[in-house]
Length: 442
View 1 (cartoon, rainbow, N blue to C red):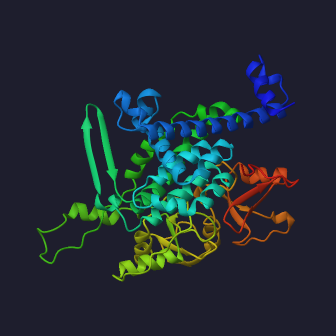
View 2 (view 1 turned 90 degrees about the vertical axis):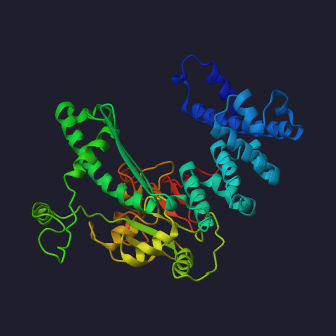
């Protein structure tokens, strides 16, 4: 039975549940292949519409506007497809990969947007072989993260609006209160770390109450509050832990500076909530930005987008941080700066106020920004320390035999005897006990 027949069977079946699982899985893969080919044909048609200027007949300025109006595309789809069309002109292999079903639609759109990125898009064709290889190897979240990191590092001397504008506004609208903040990610990751801590407290409260009512049937949709409601309550709880800054008494004595009541409150308040935030950069990036901070010209690295030699400047969970802030953090201990060698292993850590102890535990979570199972998006800071070679099989408790695994996939690997390892090119691979790879390349 051919795969195409599988697709037709499912399209005509009155009860998909009666079909063999192999038929359903094969048909799903075939349907995805057809979707990729259809996208490739659409891009080819766009190229012809653009070449002939056919969009102008109905008053459209370009092919993206024509797609939004005539084909009902969203603005994001239109921009992505326009960039993908332009990239396909420059590198025909991209279009051929789509037509062959070897390039995912989401990955292709990401490349299209990256090709249109100011200042760095022109470098995409130089690295297109790497981009196409890893688009076939990685799940979308991993591919997107590497592309985002590459773009940030390639453009680190360009526009930096996050540092140009720091703003916070608050106000009342009817019976609602609104608070809006924007600024550089180096500040945001510290907020995120504190909020995550308080959100977990609110989640545990909801979970315990749900267990009291529902027992073993407890699940997330039975919790009393939504995640956004818990986040708001976490912010309110955080207010109860704010410590007022203690101001030095001015030389003028009484009548100046902070009042006795406020001073007493600041002295008597408890200590601040302390959490570790790790920000990491590869050695070349760190040295280059150190030169910049010191006023030296430096030699800017040309970054590979993937593999062991790729540039990095992010938190443990993959949030991009400007390299300048990583350097400054490592110098003043605002957060803990971590410098990585060419293989991505920590070689330098600055000190910081510690909430958890054990450098090994922290280093273990720095080898990946999320759970290493394909398609899992649980960030490293919410994952467990997973022995790549099981301790029961003689695996050592060391930084070269550990990586982040979420609460589901860490025990699952042991139950089914699956194996996870990091290849030399920086790709995490998970295999069943029989050696068959989960989520093999396209």
